[in-house]
Image (cartoon, rainbow, N blue to C red):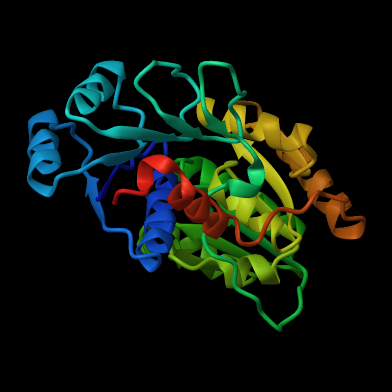
Length: 293
């Protein structure tokens, strides 16, 4: 039995939970029993009870609130620990990291090939790309989101703009009224169809950036926290994204120029493994510490 520990927050978004869901689904297909525990507040006693009741032997953690002292408790209960995308911790209680940002050391076992990034399973579509800009900025406040959307809409009136947001419709209805080229959608589980259609993706630099690579999207990252900063630094260095800037330093004029340039002359970006989550699940099943599940 594998226990998944994760949660979401306004500052971090829902990428942690999504990664765990994608990986869990693939492991279940391979007849691995899994249980997910998603709560914002840490309740260590409740987790200990779960471990003992369900006889948990393996824990996959994708949550920054679990510290070394918590993993020590899990180890003392006889659990093996797999840590996903947690690049600030090197404690001795982690058995395996799955993190393309982390370097291997003699003391640390790491799967750091980006081909094993945990992403939503790839879906093939037949329809072709159009001059469409997709905006997915889950951590941006409403004021900044409106500022970005309005600027892009005014400068690209003949281009369809898709905005994926968790804000309520009545908060953005005025934008829609005066900017008919803008379409708003509440956050959806399956964004692959939109990624397949669009040429430009404006995101915070999380999971969606990697998912867009599989559909040959020109990705502009507007990062707003430490984790997006570190991730987008890696992605631009490896030529996976086209451009990055900090939200606080955002120059809308420069952003418009960059979008215009990429629409006319797309930047050549590297591709990424389309079935990465399946590869990750397979390697975990093959690992010795999972063979007794």
